[in-house]
Image (cartoon, rainbow, N blue to C red; front, side, top):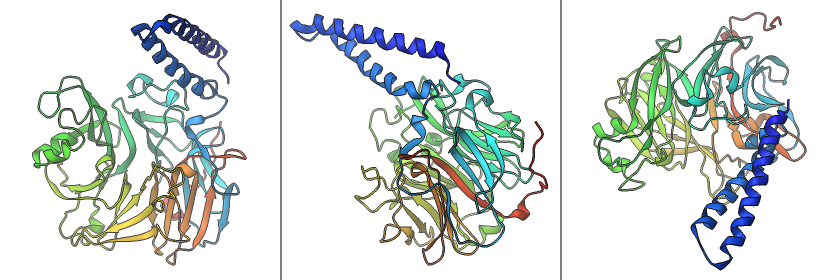
Amino acid sequence: MVDFSRVAFYASAVTGAVALVFGAGLFSARGDNAVARAAFGVYDDTKALIREIPNLTGERPIHFLAPARYPGKGVTLNKTSGDDLVLLSGFIGDNQHAQLMRRDGSVLASWNLSPLEQLPSAGQCRNVPQTNWNSAAHNVLIGQDGSVLFSYESCGMVKLDRCGKKIWATKELTHHSPNLMANGEIVIGGSDYISKPTRWPFTEPYWEDVIRVYDAQGKLIRQRAITDLFARNGMLAALTSHSDDNPKTDGEFHLNEVEELPAALAGAFPMFAPGDLLISIRNLNMILVADAKLERIKWYRVGPWIRQHDPDWGADGRITVFDNHPDGTEDGTRFGGSRIIAVNPATGETQTLYGGRKGQHFFTNQRGLHQMLGDGSMLITEANAGRAFQADRAGRIVWQYVNRYDDKEAAWLNGVESYPSSYFKVKDWSCSK
């Protein structure tokens, strides 16, 4: 529903800003002056406001759209077998949603994701959302009971029951996707604003990346700042790689994943232990492994991935990484697009599993997800392109979903993951109103 009072307010703001800039232009005809500089700063803000109006009025979700690259809508290819279910999250239809569906696209359950209604306070967000279309929900996890767990970007983490009722939400600022730990705890990235830094190289206020661990009821039980982890492991060089005087004015680390090494896979990684944490630092092109107490960095690697997401532990003793590989183009044509890369932490050997070669081009400059399936195939979320697809061992696409918004644009898909039907304890997905 359009909020006409809000429309009127923004219209009057635009009118006032235009008048201010016009007046400043007359005043500055004799030369540069502070009034003119301030006025043209307002002008830039006004242009941004004008661009934002379709979002603020509920007309068009401009922050979730991108030019459509792929034909069709919904499930456009399905050559898979089996009875697994797929959980999608993104801007689907008229709002952000999570949807549980069969491989043919038929929907079993859906959850409405609306930050203004589900967070304790919009004011807890790093950038306060003015509408439900101003904070993206990252990849959603689903429990055996049908409850869903996710985080609104730089806002907070939320858990909903299978019918969409809020169970709990955190007051602390969290971002990116949560991951479950073997003991039932939840690990996720977060941020704290440090207004008065107390040690070099931090001389001005900055946003600190923090790893937070919550219990199953959403209560914060421990946390560790990334700068503290780096400093205690002699990695000051990484802290100052962006600037020697104030390296963290705007959160240059960009922590985007924390995932526990499960006991079932620990045997494949003899240099690590069950409970160790795999961490992705996007803006340093770095992934690392720290101990469960977040005191010691056991291993790290910079590149060959660029602005990576979603590193995962693999059953073969390798870590797989979603390499976004942005190159300054909208479609990744300069350097070959995004890739899925495997790295052996023991030997350092890397291998491109998918992408970066003829017939396998895909690209998202931000976000992105991959899942290695039991038959050797890969389920890949090409987030900004609004597409998810499954490639078999031979690299052939056997399943595809296109999240088309209209004739010209697609809407983001933040995550698509497969779950075996046997995973769920829910027998009836219907919800009474």
